[in-house]
Image (cartoon, rainbow, N blue to C red; front, side, top):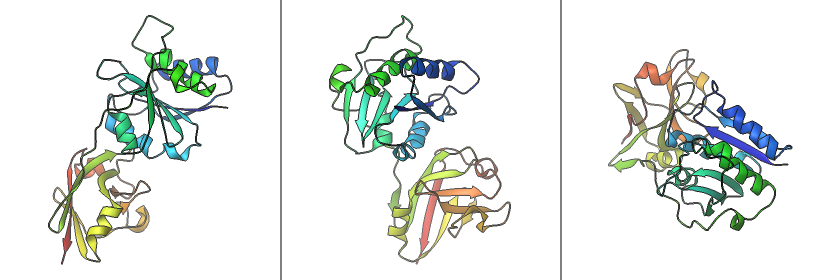
Length: 258
């Protein structure tokens, strides 16, 4: 029985999700379909990659992940099928795969499977599902297309170290408007060395790390390392992004005190 996940920017008010699911069930009647999210902002490849990167390994190996973000094919952005860490991914090489996998090894092929329709605006339904069915039936990558040895490389902005300061930025904002930075716990601890610190963003400062959201009163702000392993700024029972005036790419600094 195949497990197939769907990640897209389609929302839930149109027919797109239902059409893709119906096509999957027609091709693979015993499939288990899991919606990761359909609430990605249109064309937001980096947010889609963040979501997938933080959840795909929780699925069993052999899971097939269909990505419906910026799916229009071009010479620069081909359709590919990829296998990494025991998982399969199907989508467009619009930088998303390197953002999901980092430096992890992979095997990939260009998709040379023809569509069943003459319309090319809904390739997730008309092409990606066909490839998912081929993988689910045990067909080899060589039957899908030719080897594709080099996915497009794109890396998120990395924090920098300037003296006693880590300079980072907001990488993702979740549905609670918790603000997730690109500063990892590993980097934070490697620079801290037992010192006190101040987390600075805009005109706000936080000087401690909490273990849970309820460690502070409602509606106080806090900093925490979430399950994703990165520094997160939140407000207990509040929407940090809106109330603190933060958006993606807002600078966040951690200054250590000697």
